[in-house]
Length: 88
Image 1 (spheres, rainbow, N blue to C red):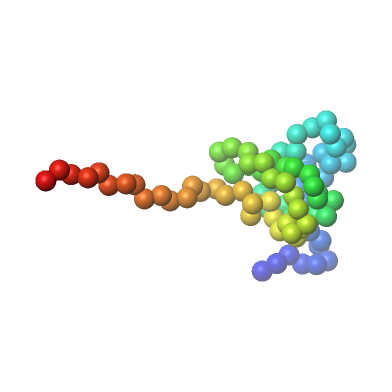
Image 2 (cartoon, helix red, strand yellow):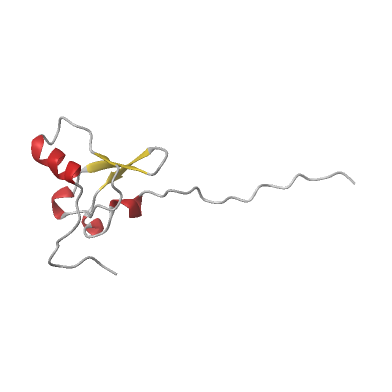
């Protein structure tokens, strides 16, 4: 279920405050993964927290309307281990 249109997109208060202050003097750290990417974020890099570290993300036009958390994976990819060969 999506958010109501009359409410508008969700954006964390800290992100909005940091964007209004100074655009170059702070690091754009995003801990709120459920904030929506807005058109004003195009061609800017953000660091999104995945629970362990911050992943750097460059926002493009295709990302508008999606959430920051969609572009920062929280789980590692599963890789099968190689079996050791036994001598006969």
